[in-house]
Amino acid sequence: MGCQNSTGLINDIEAKNSNLILGYWGFPLRGQPLRYILELANYPYTETKYTLSQANEWFGKDKQELQLDFPNLPYLIHGDFTITESSNIANYLIQLTNQQYLYGEGQDKYRVDNIRFVCDELTSKIFSSTLQKDEEKKNQLNTQILPKIKQLQKVLGSQTQFFKKLTLADIYAYTTLNYFKKTYPQEYKQFAFGFDPFLKRFEEIPRIQTYHQSQRYDKL
Image (cartoon, rainbow, N blue to C red; front, side, top):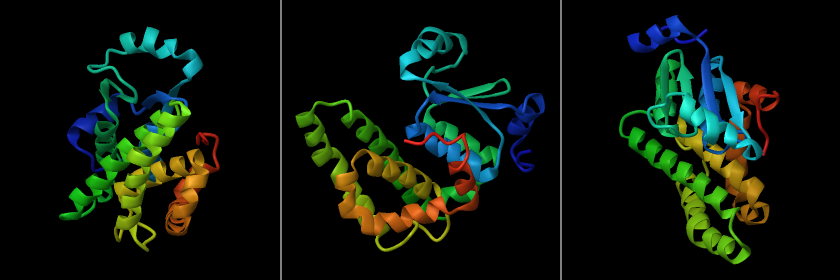
């Protein structure tokens, strides 16, 4: 299974070994958009999930032994080909699965990336806030998280997706907003009217719905 119109490089990799491995921590966050890209294409992959209690499996073993040029999580191994950095992996997977439509069209491509990178950073901010003490957590929520959530709400407006067609903006925004909703349910309530229809629309995409109902999906 896979794309018939990918570049020669990717076809060569597939010819060697079609098994694609995605390595990340055993929770969604920054690895989740990568999974959604693969699930939307129904592209087969396996995962190596590292738990925080067994972090030495990554830091003490795989980080040194996998021969990654820039060891980090997430990482991708596809035959003899290896890369890291989540945005880099996302670009590779889009090319691999022939889903270039996810980038958007024309000048919208730059707006898609705007939302994509804002949401990727926001996911990290939400996670880091959960590790803070109460006062620091409240400060980070009010100064770094809520202002960006409000900006996303303004950009989305009354729409149920950011552009006419599904793009990376929706994938990354869904990941971030779903995480925000689960992490800060009280704070989310003020945004529910605008964001709930957006979340629902994404969840009702048939392949996403199937994925969410499967054991592959790590629920927050």
